[in-house]
Length: 343
Image (cartoon, rainbow, N blue to C red; front, top):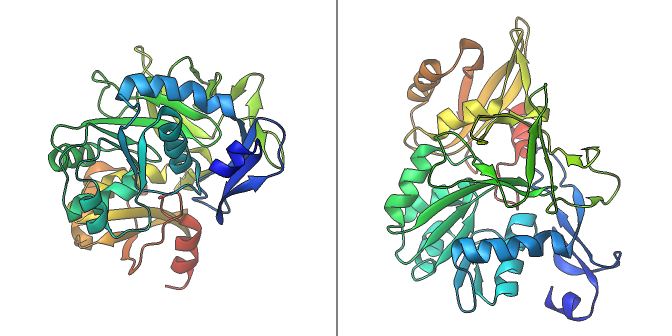
């Protein structure tokens, strides 16, 4: 990455790492999370991230010598963003992706700022906390109340901030001290939010990407959508229900698997969870949950029956021996679907 920048070249962050690439002036390429399939290649301009660097420097006290850690790597946009932000602001950046959770916890001793996804954080909490962190910045998935409480316990003195964003949009919202439970916060910086009549979330502003490498983003004029469904309250706080392309029709009702996953992940002994559809003669589709952890299946099903409508309760809960994750630190739904077909 440094060689590409110093040589005035574009660069691409891909599955094979960061490398120079022939791209238009001021453009670099990142990958989407690739949760449901092959990651998408996204082109964005330098300035779309540099505007965020200044905001986050003030918000999180990142500057020369600040010790910043990243639980992922630079193959996808969250890890790449954190590294570029730290380098731009003169911070000392440590990449902890690929280490076992106990080693990651040890490496965090004395660090100040941490960027990570919820899926990357849960194993680290199970391995033990660390003192010294001032800020834990969580993106790439829902930060539930139990995970927040665990972070505050394991990283005493740290402020936990969650943001919602996508590789296509960068930061969309960020939480603050007044954010209600269940919300992902209010609009970030000068970003603007809109929820249409179908519940789809749209954003516009200077942080959004230019396009996909092979075609345009999903746009309506200046507004861009990454496919999330949600709502805005009177105070401007955004609440997400799930992705439009993951919504499932079960017994004549729409179900968002993310809501079921949130219930499972809130239970003791569950480190990872994914909810997937299977064919059902009576309902059209039914749900199967796949977890990593030691929680008892009957306890998990009971929790789902208490918290969810009957149609959203998984038919089965399976335990995966080696829960697959994408390089972006999210459950690999494509790999899990293939595994489920063999069960």
